[in-house]
Length: 333
Length: 277
Image (cartoon, rainbow over all chains, first blue to last red; front, top):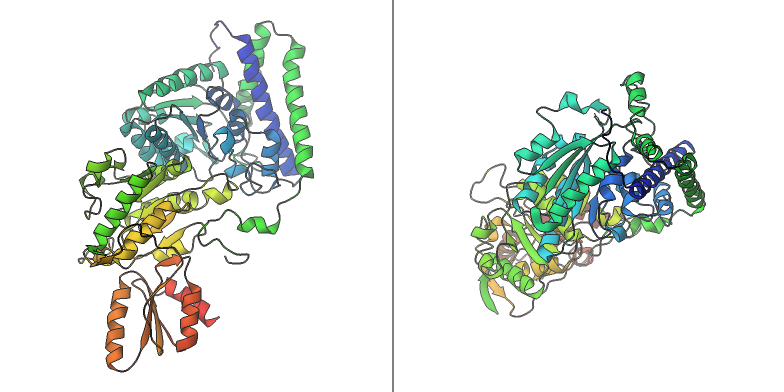
């Protein structure tokens, strides 16, 4: 990665981003600990190393803006304002989880903060996001929809259909390709023709930018500018943020399909270290930088303890919230 | 009572609901020209192109965008043109629309009507003729409606638009020109309540959609042979009116199920299994 160019840094803002990235990292480390302790129900897809996209993009949204995420969506959800304890309860399948324990990691959602859901189907959120923006336009509201998906999603049909839809109807959506280099366990580049996500987006008529997704200030600056243009009625925009997944595809994937020296090199470029270096360079004391990590870990440890102490939902919950008409009785399906 | 066609009944139902609720809108290919069968004729003139919206030939986006729009509080009526084409959007219907409320723990509803014209029609061959209602009856979260008459197409479409669940609404293409009496004023048909169109003591015939009319004619023929058939139009497959069917079969002791779909794995098998149990 190139050196981050010198610039006037808003230290308070960078500090906020540093704190948020540590909260995301610590939440996912708690989730992985839960996987090891066998209290996580279902799969976990960590975004460790990708926190700058969540912090920079989602941090640029208003609370009433709308967010749609992927199976790798813990960071986005936390950044949008979900409670860490409710999230860990959800991952552990407990009462008080964001979805009452019925969604788990892959379907985490918090409608109170405009987070309309992670999604277990790659690329499925793109068309849903276009529709959420369609409703905003129909109702004449000034909210913006942010749709984050991975690099693997650009090879799915809904990528074409959703971007075209948003462009044709001039909808308020920011599409963000959080490119961690891997589509599950396959290098995306080996299965993707052409010039990449931004080239495809531009071909559909969306203004698109590519950037270093581990540079949280660059991500936030660009996202803010794009969101402002979208909110002003400029139609959809596309951001391609290049990052790197430091873990495997899931919490149990040791990722033997990539060389150790590649991962080691990428670890030196991960976004939290880089933000800390910038803070150090701007004169922030080491103890303060370290305090962000300590506070984040303390928050997530407390959330973890509260979550494992919470009860599981009763069996009747399996038949709640299916539908109004023809709602199933216990044992109907 | 006015005598109108099955198609006109649906057109009136949509127009009435759009006048009643500004959050109702329709989206699909060619709607601005009245839709592929003319079932949206005249609506864009009254409601404008934002609420009677054209769409690209992007089934996944038509359905998926409607899921997003429904979660944001609007009530989309989604035109899929042919039920066969809706297969390009099965993920959006089955994995997204049907499951969102449940998997998000009740944080949202997905109030949308997915219109999927079904059935054999004008020799239209393998990719424009299917009746796949049993597929959707299998999916928790969906309501499956198959109106057989103009009155039901009005009253059931209005109920579907007011329903907070995603409704797969299957109109039979051969029924578009069928004319019959439709009640004046507000006409709503509840889901899960079958219609007994002919009473009889000898045999129960259960059907839905266009086959209801075939069954009615068959019952006339049977009557000439002194066999009195009771003919039941289920109207909706999920939920389906088990009570009416079981009561009828307990009287007649015989059951015939007629549907226009592949017999293997069809919804008729579900009815037969429930009655046998």
